[in-house]
Length: 200
Image (cartoon, rainbow, N blue to C red; front, side):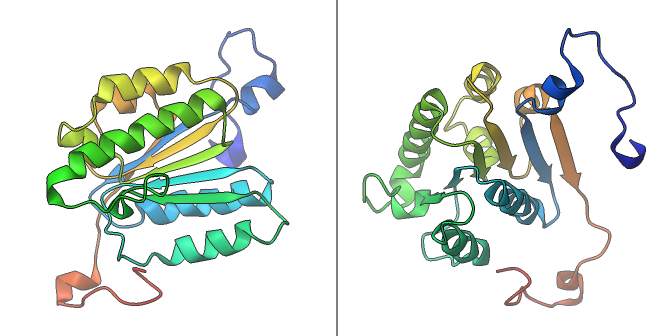
C-alpha cells in the first residue's frame, strides 16, 4: 500500500468515507516483543481523537507495573483527550475488587470477557485494547469462536485491538488487520535481561 493507497476497492456499496471510517478488529501476535507496545501506541492516537478507551489486561500480574498504564491513565485525567479506564485481571478486575490466584485465573478471565461483552453491547468505549487476550483462548478458558462472533456482531464503531502470541485462526479470520512480530535479534540472546524504559 504505497502512501496509504488501497490495492483494491471492493464492490461493497460503501462510499470511500464509510469504508475509511469502518471500525476495525486488529490482532498483534507473534513470538517477539512489541505487540502490546504497538497496541498502546494506537491507544495514544485514540486518546488524541478524544475517544473513550477501555483497556483489559489479561495474564499480567497486578504487581507488574506497566509504563503505558501510568502514562495513559495520566493522559485520561487531563480532560484534553479521551477518557481511559484500565482493568487488570491480576487485580481480580476493578469492578469486583477480588484478588485472583492460580486456582481462579480461568474464572477471572471469563469474568473479564463477560464485562467486555457488556461494554461492547453498550458501546462504552470507542477503542478497546484486550492485552494478552490470546492466552485465555489458547488455554481453553474462553471460546475463540464466541469471541470471533461477538466481535463480528459488535454494534457501532468500536475499534478492538487484541495482543498475544498464538492467536487462534477464528480470531485471525474476523480481524481486519493482523500483525505478526518476528525476532531478528534480541538483547536476551546475549544474556541481557529486560530493563526500565525498554520493557516496562
